[in-house]
Image 1 (cartoon, rainbow, N blue to C red):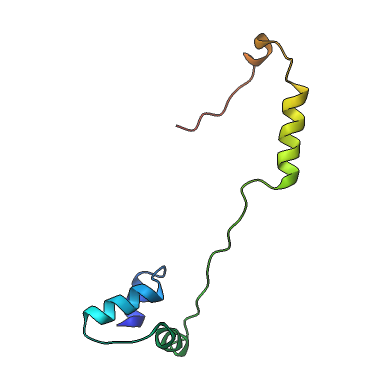
Image 2: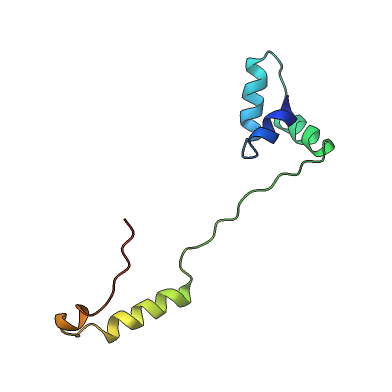
Length: 85
């Protein structure tokens, strides 16, 4: 059941599997689930959090903003803006 559940939904957590098995009447620990999946050849991983802007990008944006702070409004009418709708 554990392998089938993880194969259908790879983002299933060990906690979800513990809860599913408890509802089915079987009490197991997260460590047991990890060991079982490892024996089946499945490995766990967690996504690493990636910062959206690196410090160099922040500095570049600030530099651009400061350089164009006093530009007249007419200059901005010629700029093509990307609109995500």
